[in-house]
Image (cartoon, rainbow, N blue to C red; front, top):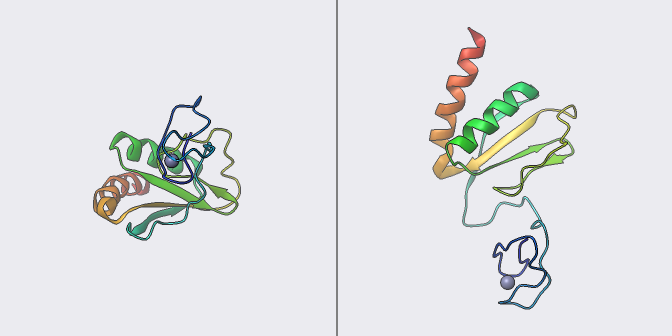
Length: 116
Ligand SMILES: [Zn+2]
Protein backbone atom coordinates (compact mmCIF):
# COMPACT_ATOMS: atom_id res chain seq x y z
CA UNK A 1 0.00 0.00 0.00
CA UNK A 2 1.16 3.51 -0.73
CA UNK A 3 0.24 6.90 0.59
CA UNK A 4 -0.88 9.07 -2.32
CA UNK A 5 0.14 12.15 -0.37
CA UNK A 6 3.67 11.42 0.84
CA UNK A 7 4.42 8.36 -1.28
CA UNK A 8 5.42 6.24 1.69
CA UNK A 9 5.10 2.49 1.24
CA UNK A 10 3.26 0.42 3.83
CA UNK A 11 2.30 -3.19 4.20
CA UNK A 12 -0.94 -4.32 2.62
CA UNK A 13 -2.98 -4.02 5.79
CA UNK A 14 -2.27 -0.34 6.39
CA UNK A 15 -5.37 1.46 5.15
CA UNK A 16 -4.57 4.95 6.40
CA UNK A 17 -1.22 6.71 6.28
CA UNK A 18 -0.22 7.38 9.89
CA UNK A 19 1.70 10.47 8.81
CA UNK A 20 -0.88 12.12 6.59
CA UNK A 21 -4.12 10.53 7.83
CA UNK A 22 -5.25 9.85 4.30
CA UNK A 23 -6.37 6.55 2.79
CA UNK A 24 -3.60 4.53 1.28
CA UNK A 25 -3.87 3.15 -2.23
CA UNK A 26 -2.53 -0.08 -3.64
CA UNK A 27 -0.68 1.70 -6.38
CA UNK A 28 0.38 5.22 -6.98
CA UNK A 29 -0.96 7.00 -10.02
CA UNK A 30 1.39 6.85 -12.91
CA UNK A 31 3.73 6.06 -14.34
CA UNK A 32 4.35 9.72 -14.80
CA UNK A 33 8.04 10.42 -14.57
CA UNK A 34 8.78 12.45 -11.51
CA UNK A 35 10.40 15.77 -12.33
CA UNK A 36 13.68 15.04 -10.60
CA UNK A 37 14.25 11.69 -12.24
CA UNK A 38 15.21 11.47 -15.87
CA UNK A 39 13.89 8.34 -17.50
CA UNK A 40 15.39 6.68 -20.50
CA UNK A 41 13.89 4.14 -22.83
CA UNK A 42 16.30 1.26 -23.13
CA UNK A 43 14.41 -1.34 -25.07
CA UNK A 44 11.30 -1.64 -27.17
CA UNK A 45 10.21 -5.07 -28.21
CA UNK A 46 7.11 -7.05 -28.92
CA UNK A 47 8.89 -10.30 -28.11
CA UNK A 48 7.27 -11.66 -24.96
CA UNK A 49 10.22 -13.96 -24.30
CA UNK A 50 12.65 -11.09 -24.53
CA UNK A 51 10.45 -8.98 -22.30
CA UNK A 52 10.40 -11.69 -19.66
CA UNK A 53 14.17 -12.14 -19.78
CA UNK A 54 14.79 -8.41 -19.72
CA UNK A 55 12.58 -8.08 -16.66
CA UNK A 56 14.40 -10.83 -14.81
CA UNK A 57 17.77 -9.34 -15.71
CA UNK A 58 16.77 -5.89 -14.52
CA UNK A 59 15.24 -7.26 -11.35
CA UNK A 60 18.33 -9.40 -10.77
CA UNK A 61 20.46 -6.28 -10.95
CA UNK A 62 18.09 -4.34 -8.74
CA UNK A 63 17.37 -1.82 -11.47
CA UNK A 64 14.03 -0.11 -11.16
CA UNK A 65 12.13 0.02 -14.39
CA UNK A 66 8.71 0.23 -15.82
CA UNK A 67 7.26 -1.12 -18.99
CA UNK A 68 5.10 1.01 -21.16
CA UNK A 69 3.26 -0.39 -24.09
CA UNK A 70 0.03 -0.20 -25.94
CA UNK A 71 -2.59 -0.50 -23.25
CA UNK A 72 -0.28 -1.87 -20.62
CA UNK A 73 1.54 -0.18 -17.86
CA UNK A 74 3.84 -1.17 -15.10
CA UNK A 75 5.27 0.83 -12.30
CA UNK A 76 8.64 1.20 -10.77
CA UNK A 77 9.25 -1.54 -8.28
CA UNK A 78 5.62 -2.03 -7.47
CA UNK A 79 4.04 -5.44 -7.34
CA UNK A 80 4.91 -7.19 -10.54
CA UNK A 81 1.76 -7.57 -12.49
CA UNK A 82 0.60 -11.04 -13.15
CA UNK A 83 -1.71 -11.94 -15.93
CA UNK A 84 -0.27 -9.26 -18.14
CA UNK A 85 -0.89 -9.67 -21.79
CA UNK A 86 1.99 -8.82 -24.04
CA UNK A 87 -0.01 -9.50 -27.14
CA UNK A 88 -1.06 -5.89 -27.33
CA UNK A 89 1.99 -4.46 -28.97
CA UNK A 90 5.57 -3.63 -28.32
CA UNK A 91 6.56 -2.98 -24.77
CA UNK A 92 8.99 -0.25 -23.97
CA UNK A 93 11.34 -0.52 -21.01
CA UNK A 94 12.19 2.65 -19.14
CA UNK A 95 14.80 3.05 -16.45
CA UNK A 96 16.31 5.92 -14.56
CA UNK A 97 19.00 7.72 -16.48
CA UNK A 98 21.50 6.72 -13.79
CA UNK A 99 20.80 3.06 -14.49
CA UNK A 100 20.53 3.33 -18.25
CA UNK A 101 24.13 2.47 -19.10
CA UNK A 102 24.12 -0.61 -16.93
CA UNK A 103 20.72 -1.66 -18.16
CA UNK A 104 21.72 -1.23 -21.79
CA UNK A 105 24.79 -3.38 -21.25
CA UNK A 106 22.64 -6.10 -19.76
CA UNK A 107 20.17 -5.96 -22.58
CA UNK A 108 22.78 -5.64 -25.28
CA UNK A 109 24.19 -8.98 -24.25
CA UNK A 110 20.71 -10.35 -24.43
CA UNK A 111 19.82 -9.02 -27.84
CA UNK A 112 23.17 -9.82 -29.44
CA UNK A 113 22.98 -13.39 -28.16
CA UNK A 114 19.67 -13.77 -29.84
CA UNK A 115 20.92 -12.56 -33.18
CA UNK A 116 23.68 -15.16 -33.33
ZN1 LIG B 1 1.46 9.86 3.90
